[in-house]
Length: 68
Image 1 (cartoon, helix red, strand yellow):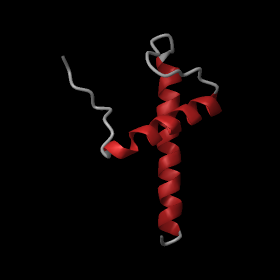
Image 2: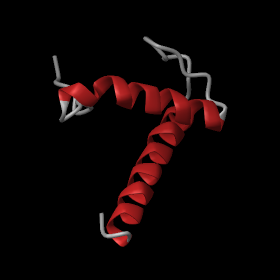
Image 3: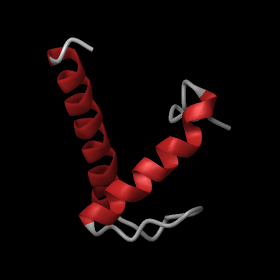
Image 4: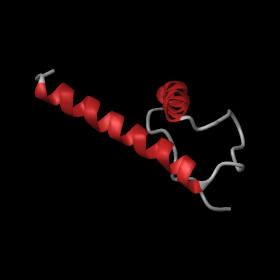
């Protein structure tokens, strides 16, 4: 069985990342649910992950620009 690459590096952040994922899915109109989401297309799932990355990069850039 292959190991998952989608692991949270900071275990305490797992719940926050799940909430963030659900928030982004809701914003994009992707019907993501807790548990199995095999009924969703690769495009739908990819759009959630892609938007999460964009938002995290934007937040980090803003943090760096403000000197914090």
